[in-house]
Length: 451
Image (cartoon, rainbow, N blue to C red; front, side, top):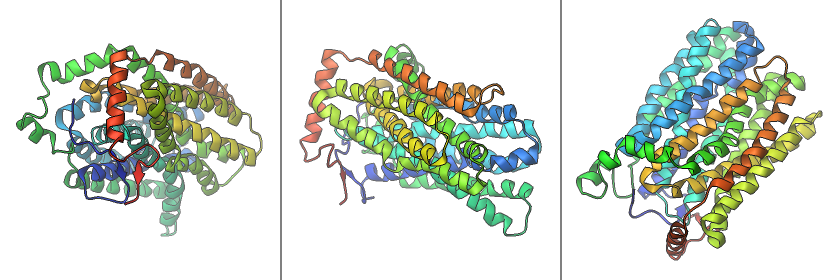
């Protein structure tokens, strides 16, 4: 796919261009999705008592919340190629809001499990966010754009941990009991999701020059059929070993973040004997690092590309992944609260920088199958969370042991970056495209402008 008129600078406080409207709407939509996706996580201590859930059952619900997302992410990427990110996001948000509001009807483990499974589809929003920013921004800033939209979206994982207990407390102040309170609390993110879906349809467009339907009518974009169809696009991505290498890498960074979002509050609640609000606040710090950490990963990706081309982007990805694994193993050993929080922040920094670095590489793997590549790699994050979920449902392993083993897995996964290689022709073409885009008064350092 060759999209014209991509932005070569991120004008952060502007909504005048379709590129910047897509930038802001995509990160906000993904941010809101976390309130539906993980809104129940900081309330699990209450839900556990209300529904009488065992540790294994809680583990199963964690797995369910991310398992279905693997499949939906695979589909949503090629769907973006077909109908465009604007309509794909609108449908996902509006339909996804329904199980979020209806989870309050669950009255036993089985119905709660089904509800979390259905809600997990919302997690596919990440793929649309990355797809939309990838086709809106030029090579010199695409790493920064992808990392920032995803990072500010992932920030929802932190704000959810902090705000949902407050929403819950506010509802209790109205005189309802805890069993009804957590159910009513989940209606709030459901309403916000639906409203955001409607707003996305009216305030964005698919590409800098218009929506996909208009581009196809004008002959600027091929119709999604035959060699450009969903099956061919998906098949091309499936056959590329680099896609699966990045699938594993993303499983070991975003998959880890999803796992921490699910267990952090209850981990601090149980291990350090904190109250629910305090445990949620500390757990929220992990996600709040997305305010700048994932963006840093993308900025460094663009900086490494400035001097090392695509090889530089891959080199930076390896460094971030290796540091993430080491920090996670350190976090698992912490016995005091202050040290646990400190190491968690370092671990969070490298985890989110690795995520930004991953999608600093993704747009260059196969431009003709961008949606399929983004979908498969994005699905890797959830596949990683599913695998990690089995560590934390086992009665024979403590959470600390599970985190240590997870850190070892991350270090091993970092070596998959060695499989991500590009032909000399592609390296030369992308290096030229980068410097042509950067020549118009934009560099990775000043890529985010304030005017």
